Length: 313
Ligand SMILES: [Zn+2]
Image 1: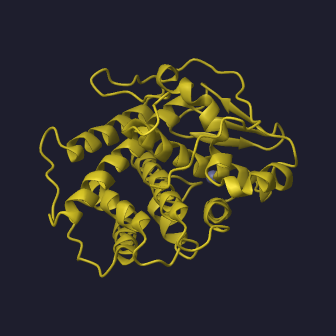
Image 2: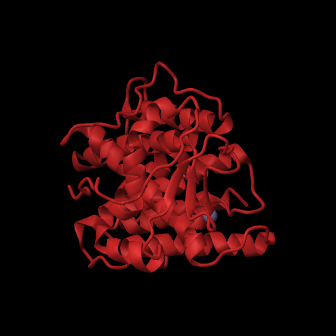
């Protein structure tokens, strides 16, 4: 499958790392997190470094004092810094793994003619739901630890292992999130503005980051489906964040944000990225809802985004 290769040579440095309990699980990803906005769209690395970042790689700072409920990631234009919180990264990893487990098993079940996934104990669905709970707990309490009975992230996963695939999904989603922060700076966005203006800025930054990842890829490129899936994973994570935050005056709900991205996302009915993302939405977020079957994965995906967004406002 078309996963991005490692790119360790990006000149992008992590800064001071404060202590949080999840630092133990996540610090091994520092270099990869810093490389993530480059690695997710390597065809645009020169453009990102020279045209957007003006030739000076920005610092990605792992800031333990960021409150994960209010600020998981934050752009600091004057300091040319993007800040991230380890609890936020750990929760994003949990959602990436949950999404991967669902997509893997649902694709396999569909290929073998099964219409539903078993959700009993010990199944991928049960494990994925546990991981969603882990993500909620990590976001809700910045002092929370990774639970000892849940397999932790493995930053140095070996080639051709499932652990590496999961990390690649996590780093792809992280790439979109950091590009969103870069977009706020690149687009000259203002802090402390009205709710309406703030919501508009969020949608604009989302669109910028999605366009960055998808805009230069030829239709049908294998990377399209991987990147599409990781954008959906990032917004699924934001939806989990929204469920913990219970509303925001600065950020629209994640499902509304995903819906607003529809003109940017590829119009490819059978794109496997839509298929994978649709299974995740259905099983992790809409399991209780009756959702009619769709003609193809792209329609299924947008029907589910619409169904999810109807519940939130
Ligand atoms: Zn934002």
